[in-house]
Image 1 (cartoon, helix red, strand yellow):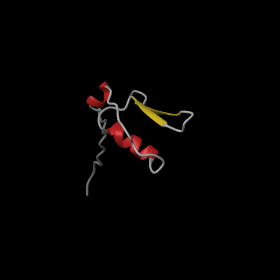
Image 2 (image 1 turned 30 degrees about the vertical axis):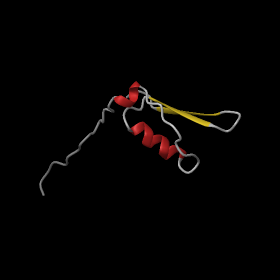
Image 3 (image 1 turned 45 degrees about the vertical axis):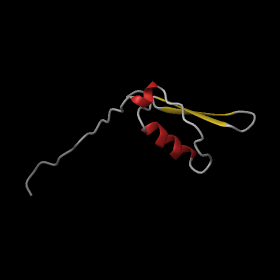
Length: 68
């Protein structure tokens, strides 16, 4: 699975800029909201190509075999 990260920078005036890498689809916005929580509101969003791609979910199912 590719690395997923969020880079947060704060400039001299206190403005916060957050950028996601490797997080595709609408998940990136929800991850930013969860990370920033009550610290900051999302003022504007610039969507990159990754936003329009889908995350591949890898689900592993396990099943117990045996008599009940």
